Length: 293
Image (cartoon, one colour):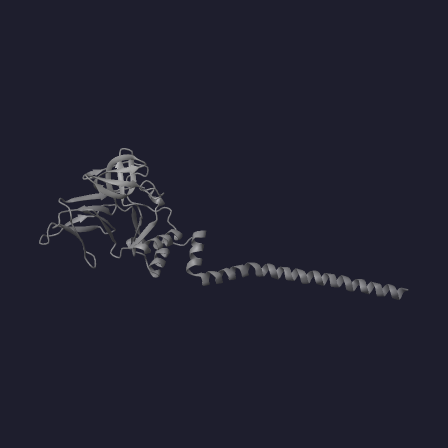
């Protein structure tokens, strides 16, 4: 699990989870029980990847800021500008930049296979498309640029610059920076532990920000993930198709128990018949004995 940490120039920083993608924000310190830890406050870019052939983007709901100190990255919140520094509080939950898989997952529809979010004067872009056009002003000709192999990059540019994806409709992203910088995010999340329950949970989390999928879209995503012979799939099917699943359960249970019940009934009648034949034989011998007397 790797992403990349970006300063004004690209910098690779090794921490507990590999490389972490952040965008420069400013100097600051962490106030914790009277102790201050100084460093750089960074805006944290999404850590995620595309699902369902690029039609949905899934990412972790991470704290938006982190302090880069000499001891590594620390998730922070409640940052306030005091003089030339930001004063922040530690983010104390289990969901943090060093344990981002503890964070809830969010989903967003990406019908044009493009996910984007603004990070300060940068735009974080993820796409499955192979290329885009870079325009240095609205009257210039576009310069074709290859999308990085990872499909994730940061776009910084002056305000008259923009990049364009020739989708339907066309999508454009304008610069908000003083210089042109295109920074590659070289690695992304793989979601090895994704399952039906986590997809449903992610969609519930996404309702709070209005990016959730409707029932048809969610059902399609589940189908693309696949159905397996395990408890996760079984619970999902009971949730989505309760009548069908209870009917099938009744049929399977019936198919299992009917032969057993039938066998027991047959055994009962067979035993009763044997007992009855034994009783009749005893009665017949008794009559014969009487005749012999």
